[in-house]
Image (cartoon, rainbow, N blue to C red; front, side, top):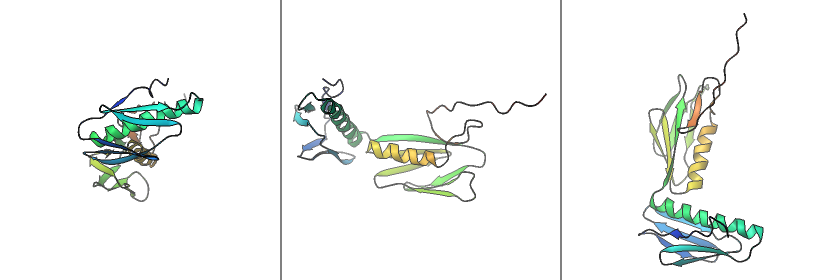
Length: 178
């Protein structure tokens, strides 16, 4: 049995689950998400819990089993609490401005860099910090990675865009001649 797959997903109050043939719909106070039904798995809702089981014991079925449960857990958590990632901009002369959908950054290029968030994602700016929030965990992570890729942190001075909890290992500069 998969360690993750065998755990039931608790359904909090205010969340409704609809199990279809190809899609499982999770609706909650923050919105609605659809999770595709994975191969060789069956999903049942019993006693305010989602139970995922697999059809056979093949290696692929075992992998799909854990994945299905993890996707459902992320959807339930997303429609109740939501997800967020924080990014930090470090660098002399770097600036940040913008609102909930579009941000504009000065990152040391000859032009300002503009980024527009996709549907369902909110961008919040606070001085030199960007908060990416939404109900879909995959979308939040993807948007945060796209923003970070605009100017990755470099190891010598640490300039660039990094996650708040990310540690940049610094390198020593060139050694001077004696």
